[in-house]
Image (cartoon, rainbow, N blue to C red; front, side, top):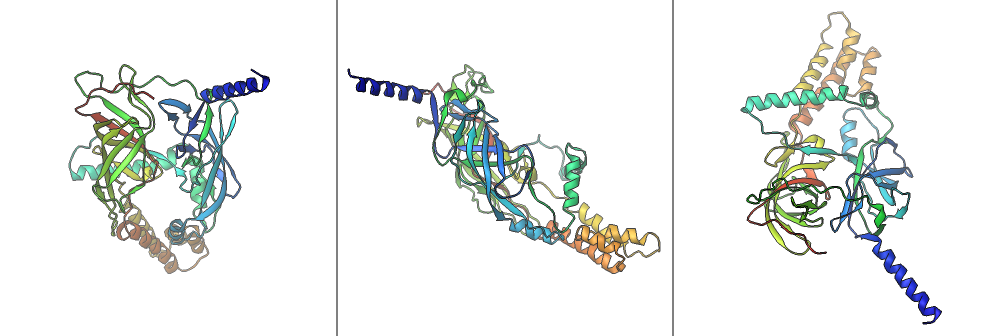
Length: 431
């Protein structure tokens, strides 16, 4: 063998060795990322986010949680709905949505990998939607519980960590124009547009497998499955019986640590209830479930799956019941308009005592501008008019305008409780 042939053999062995020591993530792999600090809202702003969940391929951990994903704000998009809502309340800030592109993966050892993704425009802090325990009592008890929960949510604004920053942002939103920023905790989910070759050593050792909840050989196993929704779902357009699918994001193990549900399996289901939001504050509702799992090998298994959680930007405004139905949380339809109306009417009570203070407190219709007009000593009728305008806007959004829709974006992270039926425990699949 001459030197040239020997060199080719060594090069082939090196290439084979390099291939064996790397994993290639395919196109359309979801990457959910989140930032940990507030950032200025400007074109060219660099973004350093972290993976919210680990990324698996063929049941092997490829990218661990908290892997750094870097990108840049490349443009802005006008937030028309926010602008209209804010202008009705005296805020003329030109609200904008950042368009972000992520282009680098930074591994734990400092290795930088090029990353191709689609642009992201739906950034928002995400929350975990969780079903509460079943409620007891009749309609009156449930309405009482809703009121108590609303009061707790409002109190949390002033008591939860970060209350100082929230107070400052509240003051900013009272003036006609204020600076904007990308909020701490904002998350995006992007899909890769080109394969990514990741060195095998980049992933930490696989965590100990979590077995199925039911280990009895006579009882079908219960699985808690993390999955990505395969399409956007909204109560505005979804139809009962509409087929849906989701992709399993992390492998699930049997009690003997063999694989029960591999990463990449497909869940097949359908929308079982969909009602669009309507006028007079009637909110939309949405419910869906899954009845089949299709393994990467093609094997199909019947299941019964229910939604028990979802990580979504809209989850803070949604409520999930124990049966998997999702609808917007009830609004404070009475408290806020009632308080605004009482304060506005007090400006007309000309008893000669503290009239300037009553005008200032009552003129809440257009934020800080209304308070300043009242402080300037204008007539009580003008102050009352501003206050009643604010009351009318509050009543409109709570009683007359169209209610809120229920929406889940594509690649929303779902938490499903799945019970196999009429099926034996699955055995490891060959890859």
